[in-house]
Amino acid sequence: MAAKENTPKARPTIAPGTFTRLLKYIFSHYKIQLVVVFVCIVVSGISGVISTVFLQQLIDQAIVPGMETGIDSVWTTLISIIMTMISFYVAGVVASLIYTQLMANITQGTLKHFRDDMFDQMETLPIRFFDRHATGDVMSTYTNDTDALRQLIGQSLPTLFQTILTIIALFISMLRFSLWLTIGVVFFMYVMTKVTRTFGGTSALAMVSQQKSLAAEEGFVQEMMAGQKVVKVFTHEEAAKRDFSKLNEQLFKDSEKANSTGFMLMPILGNIGNIMYIALAILGGVLIALNATNISLQGVSPVTVGVIVSFLAMSRNMSQQIGQASMQVSMITMGLAGASRIFALMDEASEEDEGYVELVNAKIDENGSVTESETKTGSWAWRHPHKADGTITYTPLTGDVRLVNVDFAYEPNKTVLHDITLYAKPGQKIAFVGATGAGKTTITNLINRFYDIPDGKVRYDGINITKIKKPDLRRSLGVVLQDVNLFTGTVMDNIRYGRLDATDEDCIAAAKLANADDFITRLPDGYNTMLTGNGSQLSQGQRQLISIARAAVADPPVMILDEATSSIDTRTEELVQRGMDNLMKGRTVFVIAHRLSTVRNSDAIMVLDHGHIIERGSHDELIAAKGTYYQLYTGAFELE
Image (cartoon, rainbow, N blue to C red; front, side):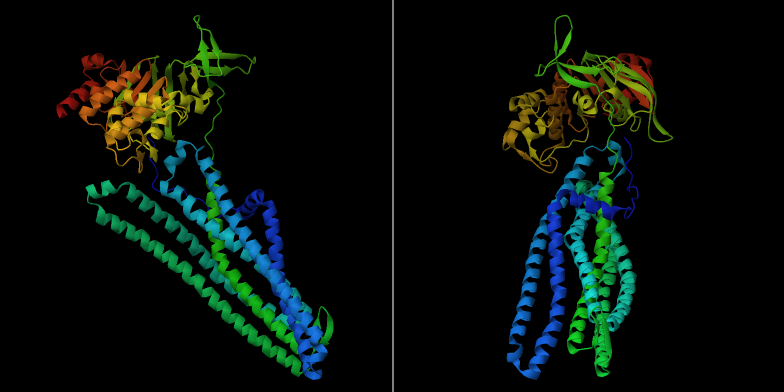
């Protein structure tokens, strides 16, 4: 097997074009909702700005004249302005309520689509991807990265958009009131922007580091949970604590730096805003005292109290908007980093499948003529279209497997198989023996096309397997692995995993064939017993029996047994072996075994060493030759 790297290959923090791609992805699923959100944010932003405009009118057209001539003379104007302000406030509140509700739906819906697309894509990835990426790294994409994306879509982007819109509206309104005061605001905005870039950039980088540290810690915890028995057997608890403390300390440092710089920014900007407020108030008082001429978009006019009060309210609003935007910088950076990693997973190259030969139900008459059937017949054939002349031929599925001059390397310049040539006729049992790392499992991985070969050929019923569609090829192969994977569900569900259309009777018959029925019927709920945690409530041997039953219900013509009985005790092995003998009748079988007693009845035994077949023959022939197999076989029994 290929060695899994300890750390995943480095991926860019934020890939170019991530933000644009994210917007397109969201828009592709929620066009109408986003248009409504856009309108509501505009209404909400304008309503907040327009209130300051009416504040100036309220002072200059109602309050000041009313103080001079009496409230009765301006009552109608006063009521009109107040009612208009209330209308805008209500419109803003309703718009905010609508867009926040819509954004909750858009956010969770987008995450659902992302998770669906990620999982769909992950199911198309080749085994090589999982060899090179740690489980914790992939899991972090589903958890940490999607959570960062949730904050980006649901909070940061709407806040940022509303902030930008509000700042633009406020700036235009300021120019409408006073050019001189607006120049003062521009100066302070420049200072705020420089501070935000300095502290916000540092906080953003720290947030990304925090996310990476969190992923590393999460992956470590996942490994420790999965290997808790090993930890306890080797009394590795203290060492595990030390390793976790190192990761946790790194997470603490990154989190402290990210949050301290992020939390510092808001108070600093708030104080700059207070200074701006005081400076504008002083400047406005000076302009009124000097009876200075006011220049604005409305023309030239005297500076009034209403202008100053409204302008101060707008400056306060603007400083708050800049503060809110600055708080989103780190969240946006972290969210885009998460989106970049999500897109990186979605962009991983899917497993290539250039095959065009399909596995179909077939009817075979007495003369051996094959015709395709739309219904299940119990017989199968390869449907082979020929592009040259447009004809279609049907080859019966018999299980004839041949490897010719096969070389293979998981990594360039590290060849693990050298010029492998062998054949397995229908119904033959071929065994692979040899030391760990000799290449036994690699050969079976090539038959499954988990990996493609650069040199040589693998033929199945005379057809190059590169021409066979991978799902059809794998449907014709049954595999029982040394490491059993049972899924959350009933025993019946786990057996039916081998063939989803299998009936309960089919599953029970397969269990009986594998000699698993006896222990299953003694479980609390029999075949309806719920399994969790990879079947942790069962013994290793019982889990393996269910795995064998799962392969049996698939009823394939070719069976691959990769150390299928290595985890079963001697007594259970005898029961399983009888079931396996029944299972192997009439099938082509490839067996990988360290217990050489299980391969004595093989038609041919291949002895591998460092990727070479150094001996081949029947048990008796190899024993008579007194070579490597003889040494392995006799040595194994001496150890027993």
